[in-house]
Length: 561
Image (cartoon, rainbow, N blue to C red; front, side, top):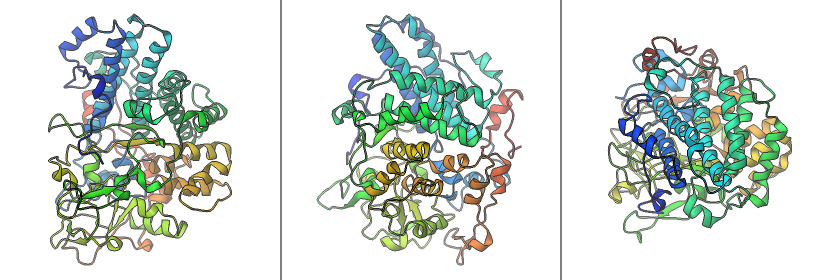
């Protein structure tokens, strides 16, 4: 395990394009950059790094994107947090604005940072033809990566908020204020076009992924990442909107053919041998020989062959200029919750949000009793020898936390404190967006062939099964638990959203209880009304401040008005 991790771009130098303090409002120095830059390939490469930095800023500036909120909205987790905290997480968990009426801007930071990232991509794309290129291949490779990041950012927003403004070129602040919401089809059409271009032109075109390539380049968008993301977009769009093709006409056959290129041995990607070694929390042990962290690990490392694409983070940031994965500080065990860690490898430096739903755990034990992935995915207080502190203030304590993205410790300190770091801002574990296992399971879903799914099962010692939608859905549920995928799967499985509503609902007959701090001696019954998900169409609350700034041009989503 690395103590201080350098970002992937450090070796080539990072030129951060000037930031923006307001929504799509450019710093005056950006004008100088525009007039003097975008002439040489070096200029283009520096601008591209600025695009990657803009993407990272979505996650370093906000807790919720892509991992935390989807985990809470799904059947995997509850809101959690502290007994003295606001209930914005509960609002997300139960799709009920009445639980926290003052929380009107839960996704404001994500929204603003997403459009700032899109602005950077749009700027580079708009200047691509004025640059002197040594070859068309180099030109296309840079454009492809910018378009990949734009597509990914729009995909995350459109899933979350539905109809959003579509911006395809750099615009002024005045233009930004009068942007109307575009149809989802228009947004998906751009996503589709961008990913098709990236699939043909991004990094590793006609080249195999290798460990040596990843050592210097992990985190860059590749043709394999673009083809995989296109499949994910296709499955979500056609499922959620009840369509048969993407709006630009891309078919299942095209998506499948592209995905088979990732499956091919010529891609270089594959499954790592041991599932648990992909997450430090699942494969670490106490080791006093390590005088700093007190841990040993057989973690397979970043940039491994199963990682098709990840968003990179590092530990070098400071308050106000951090480069850590903010979401992790929410999802671990709440500070002060643990009295004794036993011999476990966890730390309690987090906020205690997204406590794991015990029904999800118990259902998993019934659905796949011998599945080792459960132990690799869930921290189980009782079975792992942890005990609660006498005065714990964890809300919705269930005895379970996610293990894949969590704070580690050695029984006395969390490993961040032991390294002179702050878990609140220096969370250096990468967010793995696409794994090769997803390539396999998407192929099974697209083709109806169980052989791909059974490769995933064989890796963890489970027997082969015949293909069915139920088997495929159960496999995805277990393989990708707590990776930010489950909620979007629930939405796309049934366009009426009844499947998703049934999955997240909790009734009194389920007898699910949570503990709200040390004073809650008997526990509190947890209830979730799945109908509220249907009423909101599975979408989230549009940031109220953004609606206000638009002078009413932007409209609130159903279920949140």
